[in-house]
Image (cartoon, rainbow, N blue to C red; front, top):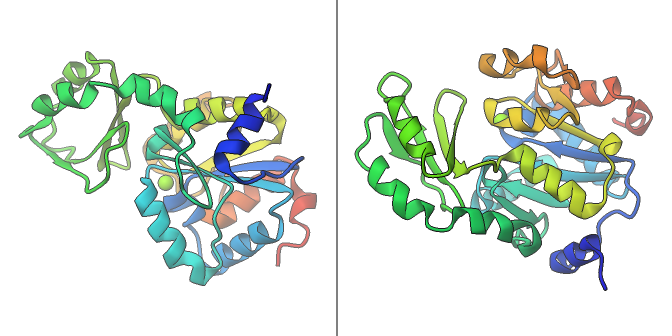
Length: 267
Ligand SMILES: [Mg+2]
């Protein structure tokens, strides 16, 4: 009888680090892709050198096609594939290398999304201040919204269908199966992987990262965090507000949480 971790590794078709010192869970835009290019290159090189000690997870609003494009484009800066990807704001979990979805983690989310688009689309079509994002719509719907025009009364009607509305960066509106977000999916994944909370550090910069910080895991709010996320800081006791932006902020946060020794060879 295989353990959940063994089943997950079987579905990933690649072994994960046996005994990582750190599980680093990073948002992409504004976080792992944020900060100066010099700092980004340093951090990407460091991640590449520490693949056995640092289990790296992307945790992003991007869909898998967009993650694939990014890995291709930013290879020039040294960005390498993570071990795992949480995409679609928590609605997708995939192998970092093949970007193939992992059924063990995705099937329960699929079940919660079943039938939702059919009920939601009639409400959303033609709604003021909304335009669809050009994304695949696996287990979520993604829109741009205009804060001036969008009618907030629509939120209640949408959420009555068992869906959460998630606003981020003053421009993105995601409709997600109720209770599914970056934090819930990360927590479920850590459980499957039998990883301990003290090994984990998360990092993010916008409101869709709030659910990660609310898990109570160590979190780094990078210096360029959006004001709406900053407002939540006083009720996030395990979240460290970095001064530095993007990648430099991640490093500042890792030192804060006692991972300085692991960073000793950061060039
Ligand atoms: Mg971001």
